[in-house]
Image (cartoon, rainbow, N blue to C red; front, side, top):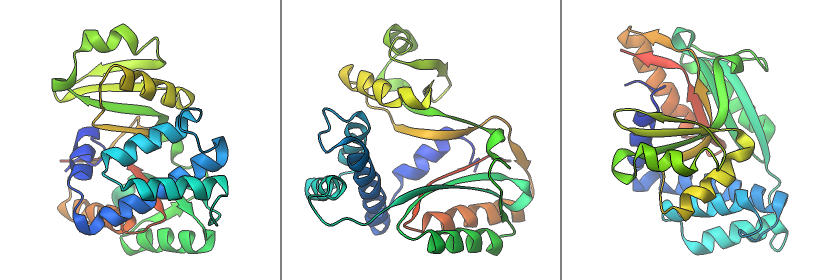
Length: 241
């Protein structure tokens, strides 16, 4: 296990069971509602919404669910007022965490996240306490079988990518947060479907973890956080041997 490893995270996401699929749909619905509220309900004129609709399609989310989430965002259906919140925290072994939450109840969300960290030897931290250990950027992961480095370089940098990184497992594109949707559309036009695409907190430094007890506590903490419907994304910087 190496939770900071981007490709291990993809494999983890691909292993979502049917029992947890409902949580994935719930999280996507919230993001879609927020995007429609902010930029309108037409995916062609709302790049953020278009990207989320594509993600929903890749997750096999029913089209009715997607349409309902959009209509909630535009006010055509009664909607819950969601708020996006970012928590910074320390986990077991001094590992830094950034937890992205979308919630209709800030008090409940804070209580749940705080309790999860406390249960496994961690604690919430103040704003800016750990964020400096991460690069906040758009991140696309593409398996080697889908394209080549030369093909990506031909258009990705012009489409907004800041970097194209080749690894043994595939290619990683990084971009400014504001260029994320433009780059997503450029990949779509080229027929290249990323294995994972998100606005991420990418570790710039990692914390080595060799103690099996700490590694297990970190694994359990990740699982606990992912059980909360309010939690959208979890980023951390451990490097487990």
